[in-house]
Image (tube, rainbow, N blue to C red; front, top):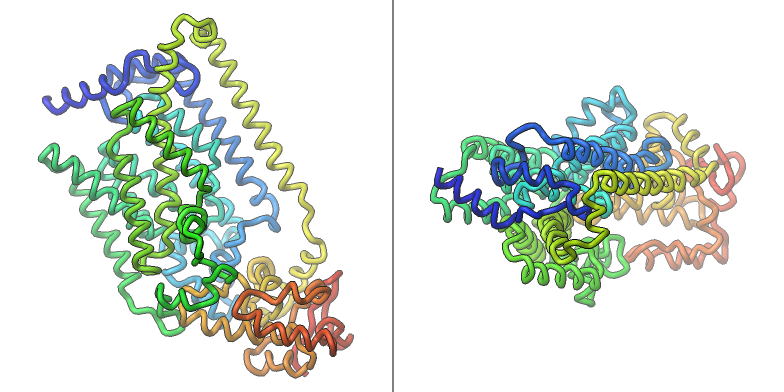
Length: 590
């Protein structure tokens, strides 16, 4: 009883009775009153929702659905629209429908390894790919994740605002306007990161500790880097709560059991030594000596500009523009002064532990994965829930300052509230429709589509070579193995990368060859059956030297080809199996 009274007193102090919603003053007055008289610091009401709360929930559902359709529907409707990383993480899953695909393909073995495809993700594709096209599966998954994000944003925002419905509304609207649903696109392992972190943060703030265990388990199954972020956050947040309250939280046995299972899964995957055709993992010292990680490299990471390296960069930095970071820090500082105790301690713990993980990842490159992955989702969750906690306070202060104003009185009318909500729906519908039309109006490359259709008719064991960027989509769209590609030549695991780099060099030598011997050597050494030629590569070949260190090797080949001619640019008719526009499929070998 004493604990409940303390919590209720804190809630009353944090949420004044004049509290209002995101921009509508009394739009949520009934819901706030219900929270103030209900159970504090919990996402549930003590009774059935009042009418205002009911229609507001349905309004949020409509808004979320409209934004989700605008963001996700075009990829589902068109096979030529997809996230680039599908060329890494989705193509190999066609094996679940047809085990005869990609025989002996080292890239398929690498990207299906638990390091790149956690067991939960593999289980989804294993269950669905035999019945639904694998690319379609990757585009259906985001709809389910988007629904989870919308629900968890509402629950998390309400918890951050001390139980006020206004906080949930603010969080959902922020999430939709900020396009946080983009995190869910692709159906990859990292697509699960944002909802998993939201689940864990909500569980801690709302004292649903068993759900924190579920978040740990989901992280281990679908996106292991989230376990690090959640672990640090939970240690600080729950540790501080334990120090204050001197008792274990309700539901701790479930947290312990699920946490141990999650830990076992992570250790099983990461404690096992890497096979020689995969590892070892590149170290920070090695990466600093490799051109691949330099400013012009395929996986550019390092930069001499500290602002670029730590702030702007998408792999090493916070992936934010400096002016936006400065603005966010200024707003956070101002809110701390103006609205003391408006933001729960758990959110400060989330921000602090995120930055600590970011610093640790930099200190032990690349043992904790990319540093940016430890802040990409956590800081997005922090900002969303911080706004949910602060915005109702800010609006309440404005309403108090403008008490008696005509516009404020109008907003107290349910008719004005619903009209304003309708305007938001119409705006979101228009933006979503505009986005869908824009994406679907992009005309696919007809010649490229014909190319994929032809390659798919070749025997399943056909190995295809091409300029690396031209090879990217072939496994996904035509379901045939490629010698190597831009997407598969990643330098983070040296055993795999060395073999891929050797293949890429041979592929580039054939692409810019002036002698058929270099082209036919691909069949002798690797078993390549055909080479996909893109004549656009020869119009100004100096633009296609590829990334360092391969560019230095390709320059003399291009110079020689400019003098003597590129054999693949004008192959003899008896070698050409297919031609459409700039594309041709040329037989390799005698």
